[in-house]
Image (cartoon, rainbow, N blue to C red; front, side):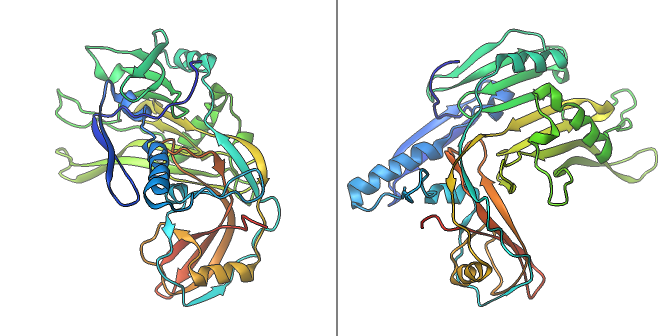
Length: 381
């Protein structure tokens, strides 16, 4: 494997801009693409560069404190940048009243994990390529302007775009993917009509996805389970609507169905993610064809323990606004219905050296709106 991990993205034409804390322009760069799957895989982890630039700009221009704050353990408190990429934004206002109707918050095994992207596995790439009949040699793909690089097996077909397939691993992000150009859309040019779509049902797609786990050297033991012991997964769908000439009716057809699994946290807790972090997905189209695999599990090792909080302490934090959320508007009166230990993950763009535990609290407002809040445990003694 080539040494080092770099930042970079290869996309069609994206301009990245780095600003200091006063919103002064420091650096900008425009990146162009080379292939479809490379646009998906080689992503500029610009936030890492931006974090360091902001840090030095703050020290030089303002003389302010560094946001990395060591807690006396072997792990640092998450920075504002990491928080914004994993749990949203600080609550903009206080909560008027909080009524607790959930179970007691977890008090044990609040582990903090060091996290890093997986290493390149040549055998894995060749095994996946052989399973889907992707012919070709492993290439080293580079983007010289950004320093991004990875490994790619690509089979192109100039006469049939839908038969093009690629297997790729990007060292800069640790993301592994198998992809085709087939998005599930079908059209009979002679009949000028859509043929019958035969995308697997949710249950069929789930069983097909589970059958593919050994191909990636995975089992259900590597995947998260719900508190009732059942395997946790979600389903994604892509559909089209059209006017059927034969019946004269408007039809809606599922052309893709994805099954998404989540990374198991060693000492327990739910994976809460943004994008592909801690996620494994399999996408199917008609005839049960596998058109995509996207996999990004971070390698985790316990680095320390955070201190728990009681129900009363969590209520106090929520009332005072000492929590984070993805919701722009939070009701002033909340009834807490669920409290779960969670490990938020940013996507493979995010430089996330640690996974920190949070209490993921679900609340319902007087108007019935549900919101999710992330309340940190005690980072310091």
